[in-house]
Image 1: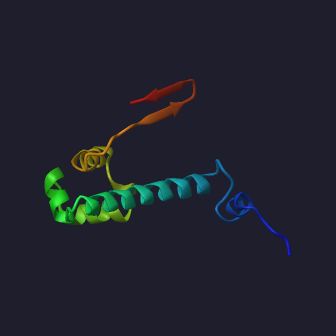
Image 2: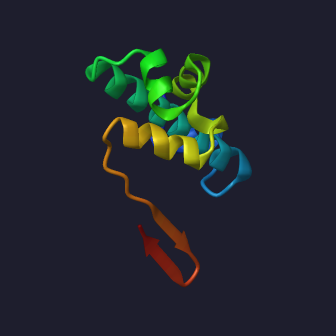
Length: 102
């Protein structure tokens, strides 16, 4: 029986690193993880979706959508959520010949 590394399986099933398919998969995975982290933190802070929504000025349904998948939310809304949850926020932007940490 032939064995495969995780990298080989990912390259075969999802696509090689740098391809549009792989980049989309990686982005969606990151957004899903952000949503799950928001939900976990909200629950740990004993906030309902409605209460968090009121803190940032959105409806409960929007908090539910963010927790399910944060990919369809603006950076501004995410910033308000993180601020309401008292999260430490760090941005890192990497462009050719430029690296910015905020």
